[in-house]
Length: 185
Image (cartoon, rainbow, N blue to C red; front, side):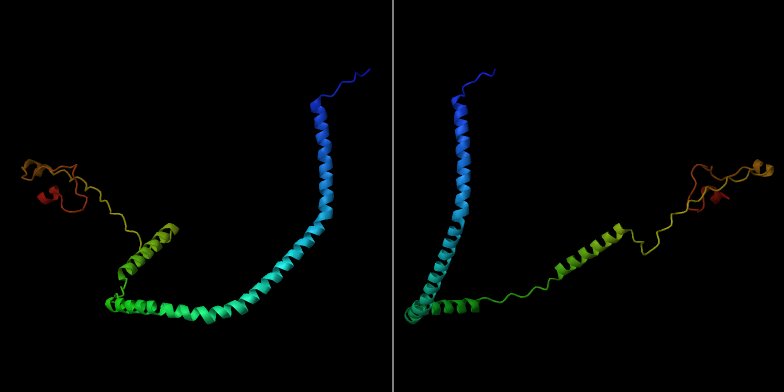
């Protein structure tokens, strides 16, 4: 048998809030469906009335007030401003006569720097793209082998004393010129 428990007040309040929320959502939905057309027609009527008021006011300002301002106030403003305008024009003319026109600079230095920069950029791009150079690369310097040591002297020449300086075999001239041993012969 299932024992019946009493619901706590918080549970009762939660149920009541849930029911009231559902009722409020239902009433809001009904209000939206019934009031939306009425609100839209009222908005359209207000926009139409505001447009009519704007057109009437702009016509009145353009026809009545603008003509009156042109007739009454514009000539007065011109008369009041005429001395100030004349004084300003006189000052401007005086300053313009004192100012010498500046000579126009040719800008050759700027042009030179620009051309050098463009040339450098083109050279850089060509180098990065790997275009073949316009001239062949230089050939590496030829390395000459050391001359072979002189052949031993015949027996008769060995008996004669020589007056040539001693030859250093480790130091050979790579340029192909005369060596110390060649100069003594």
